[in-house]
Image (cartoon, rainbow, N blue to C red):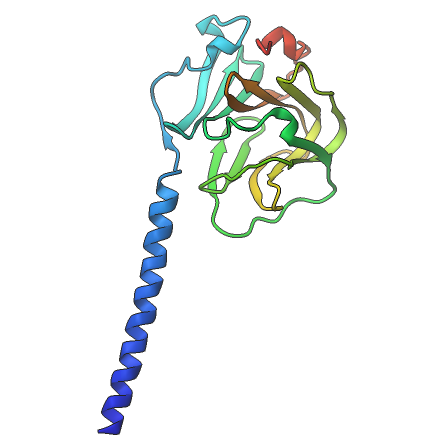
Length: 226
């Protein structure tokens, strides 16, 4: 009799633990699914308006995904010379460009936990890893790993730029939690990073020459950032 009661108690405990685990898994799936990005095959010209030369023949959409009310992530081949990644966020309209502080770092960031992974082909390849539900507040850090890094001062409260030969970019929030990591298949890549506030929305723009090509145009000659 005692043995049967004991086994029943063990069985009940196991059922409770399994139920709690399942509830936690389901909750996490429901929570993260509301943040998930999905591929989009339409509106390829979504960000052409940002370019001073917006002729459609200049653009080839390499990658596009997003979610209404969350954001859109697009990568363009521009004039077969420059690869441009534009990431627009709809949920951080309370943040400004000066809420992101550029710093140089010496080591690659460690990824811990589950991150969404996006690989964008080309030369070089770009790998983007980010948490399902991004969480930026004020006092965020943008960590730059590379050489010859230069940082422009804040311009018109709308954008700021860091550029140099980069291997990795990481975005860390005020709680020191890694939100986004971007790295390249090659050791060092000539890269511009622009943090831009367009009306109410925050945008990250990343540019680098395609392959071994040299692109000498000034950023202000390409984009409408005013």
